[in-house]
Length: 181
Image (cartoon, helix red, strand yellow):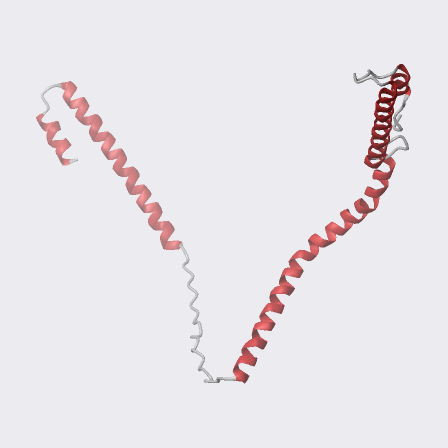
């Protein structure tokens, strides 16, 4: 601010004086604002309460080793390990128990209803794979019998050329119905 006052003394024109006074006013306003803010914060911190809790934690003393070796030490360690495993299994069972309850509530009715719906879907007109295979085997056996009969007929007639299917075989094949219909 002292520098601005010196500039005000050296200013030669009114425009320079107005510019210096404007800067001087802005700086003084900013300074007053900062001083008020500092006073407010000092007042706030002087009224604040500080709470301190001090607590001593007991120091864990290292356990002294028994120096046990041999069968009894192994038995003791195994017993402790068995207890740890049992606690772990109980924890897992406790965590899974709610899910088992939900699975039973939702799964048992669904399991009981699924076989009934599958039986309802199967209609008497449905042909199983076994029935289809039996029908195919029957058709093939009939055709083989017809081919053998044709060969025997051609042999009796004494011809060496292969005859076509006789009209009776063709009509029989056209008239044959599959068991699925």
